[in-house]
Amino acid sequence: MILADCISKHYGRLTAVENLSLEVVPGEILGFLGPNGAGKSTTLRILSGFLPPSSGKASIDGFDLREQSLQARRRMGYLPEAFAAPGELRVGEYLRFRAGLKGLARKQRRAAVERVVQSLGLQDRIRQPFQALSKGYRQRVGLADALLHQPPALLLDEPFGGLDPIQRQEFRQFLRELAADGMAILFSSHVLPEVEDVADRILVLHQGRCLASGDQKHLQQLARAESPLQLEIRGDVERLAAALQQEPALNPSWQVLEILPEENRLRLKSQSPDPPESSGALFRWLGGQPVEVLEFRWLRPSLEDLFRRLLQGEAE
Amino acid sequence: MKAFFALFRRELFSLAVAPYVYLLLAIWFLLNGMVFIASLERPAVQNDLTLLPQVLFGSQGLLMWLLIPVFPPLITLRLFAEEQRLGTLEALLTAPISDAAVVLAKYLAACLFFLLFWGGVLLLFLLLQWQGAPIVWSRAAGGFLGALLTSYLFLGAGLFLSSWSGNLVLAAGGGAAANYFLLILPALLSDVPGPTGAVARAIFIPGHLDKAFAAGLLDSFAVAYFLLGAGLFVFLTWVRLVSRRWVP
Image 1 (cartoon, each protein chain N blue to C red):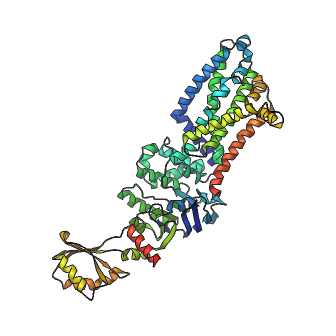
Image 2 (cartoon, rainbow over the protein chains, first blue to last red; image 1 turned 90 degrees about the vertical axis):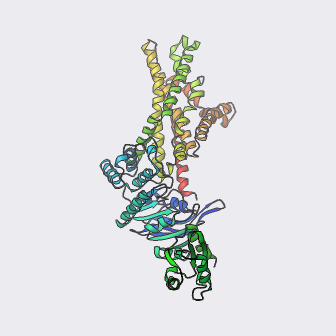
Image 3 (cartoon, rainbow over the protein chains, first blue to last red; image 1 turned 180 degrees about the vertical axis):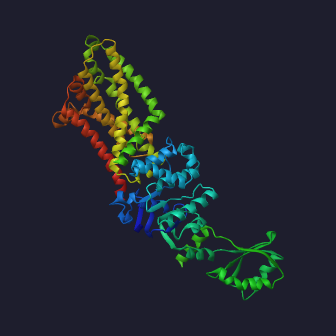
């Protein structure tokens, strides 16, 4: 449905995207993960038909975005990162205008606007001018606009930006429902948990190149490998750390990352590719120590940690 | 066509509710009133009022040299430059509407709206007739048609310049500069002997208003020149939009 075949984009000497290939099939959500400047927006702009690639091909539902741009655009909805609507238009007026722009007849227009307004909870905002809306509602209007003509493919550039936690949750749920209806969804984000939570498959982009791609399990494994285990104990933290480092059964598979005596906390890092699998021996050993474990949890890695790991893996 | 009319209506609506457009209209009417009175006070017009359209719309009038080149770019600056500045252009150009429909809808809406500007000047003629002045309507209508076609040519130039950047000053200033270029360059070259001078004379805009429109004559060459000129700028704007999708 959404296809990019070896696309690259150069701005003079700067390479924004390099040899990127991806495919999103109907009913699938592909999360596009990367820090700011990774090339996510450029890729989405290419896939929306706004920018041409320097090389490679992109298509929506089999229609080439360069040669059959209009047909391709008829089959996709796009929410740009900095979505804006003319400030003088009210939400209802804007959506009716966009429905007309998407070729819907007058009767269909009204029904389409009612449908998206209902789905996205915009009933109370329909008479408000766009410029009076909060960021969260602006995003909803942008998504409503993208969905007006019920396209089979949806491209969303940082759709969670500026939303509060409840709105994010609602947005994620809404995306899942759309995918369940058979829509192919590609969205970008620079926040790891957001992508993990909603995407079926994840593509990690860094400096315009694909660093890793795979399903959630694959990325979670990569992320977990970088996750420290934090223990909160009652007892002597420093003595426990010293004992751990001298224990032949656990050293070098477990390393002390950080000792926080004031907080009674100890952070450990496993050398195993799947740390939770290897933690059994650690907990057995802890059972024989003169301390009480009050809490243990895997700290979620930041996106930077994940990138470091992926870049290290690439260098090796 | 649905998409075209949706955008056309939106453009008209946006012009109709933009406060700065009303400020422009007020200034236009004020300056036109002053130019109109100044034209009426000219000795030639005092002696023969039927000459008013030629004096007002022709090459001697301030209307042609001062107002018509400046006001159209102030309207067209919002067509693309404003969209780019506000960030709404991306949503527009990724919607399923052809680039040709986008350019035509915006241009034709600006042309239709500009009739309002000339409507105010028409009122001055009607007022004069109501006061008992002998207005030769064939000449007045010719003058209006010439001025209208000139403004449509300049709206085309403004549209083209507006598509180049999100900077409103550049869009308006560039449009006005292009219009003055179209006015002044042929005037400077018209005395050059040979084909250069002949071409310059043929495309000298105020000359067409003097000899044809304001004299009450409908010159098909002049009409074609203005329409093709406007069409050329509309075409160039379309090329500009299309090239965004094609030039890597």
